[in-house]
Image (cartoon, rainbow, N blue to C red; front, side, top):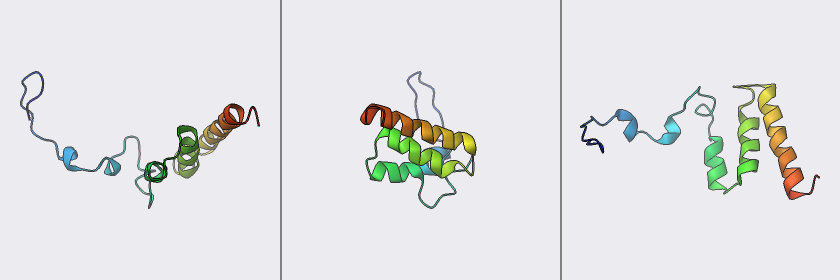
Amino acid sequence: METKTGCVCPQSPKHNMSALDQQTGGNHYKDMKIQPVEFIHANSIPYFEGNVIKYVCRHKAKNGRQDLEKARHYIDLLLELEYNGG
């Protein structure tokens, strides 16, 4: 494959893999039967709601309480922005 600079680079095996098979920073999503991103995308779930799903799904495998606090923060944002403070 030739890049913009003219360099010829061999095609990496990663180019043939699905992006869902790759994860940076752990495997807390890859180990799930349905990854949160697949569910969020398939259901056209908006950004804030998607983050709530993502953080709740991963809290036990990644950052524990911190991820639940992040999910709560996105819920608080939804309450404030969508329901005038709840």
